[in-house]
Length: 313
Image 1 (cartoon, helix red, strand yellow):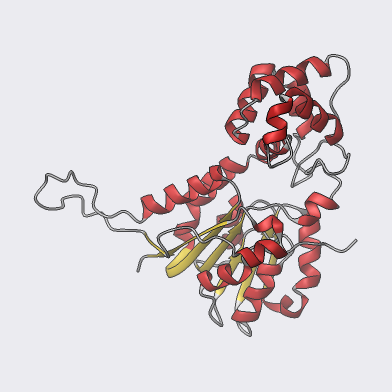
Image 2: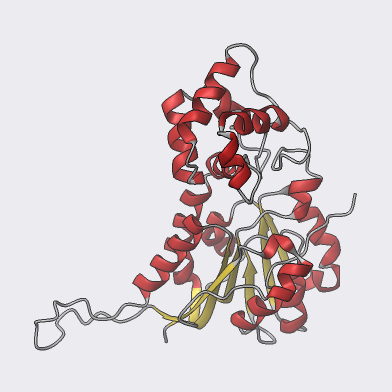
């Protein structure tokens, strides 16, 4: 089956990266390789792209999509947190741009068979990298009621987290929860009917998101990445992050803002003593959002937020 995915905010992301012929760029989450192909076309003929993805299906797809640029391409099967190690392995000291797209691909949702969506009844897996040990089913069946409730509340911002956790624990005493269909039904039935009727999204959406974040340690990985990535940029090089929910976007916003801060001396001091210099300059004051036309073409892009910053000279 062909790898199906439409890259979110492709034109905006490529413009923010400021791709130049001959530059070295990194796509930290290849997905359907749409962003990667656009980067390669703009940095040709001498530019280099390092592409990373922890999903083996995405790597296989990228080999085909990016074949025209294969001589200037390095594909890495792993997590974007390993970017410093990958660049060291390739003897690359610094890069001109880094792109991180934190969204799921349509392939993962529709054809991976790993239970990222409740639209099909599939094994409750949710691992982006199948080499890792913990599956969503392990969390659902092994965590205590309080731990499950906290997970759904913290990562999914789920209002009915306690009721849902209670329902799961009661149900698994009779039969383990192994499929997406089982879990989606449990969540729907645990939420009051009036609340379900008022929701604009499927009642299981937040629970599935929370489990996916926990299985793949997404927020911890993002935090580690943000701590390391800026040091890998050349002066003037840009880092762009596409996020898809508030927890991710908040982390990116706060980290970029902190690195763009200059003097931290108390305001009552007559002159600066800390001599702090900004590490980053923000490209745009606010996150960019997809246009209504793009959302109409690609509904998966509707919650996208794009933030970009450039490394100070």
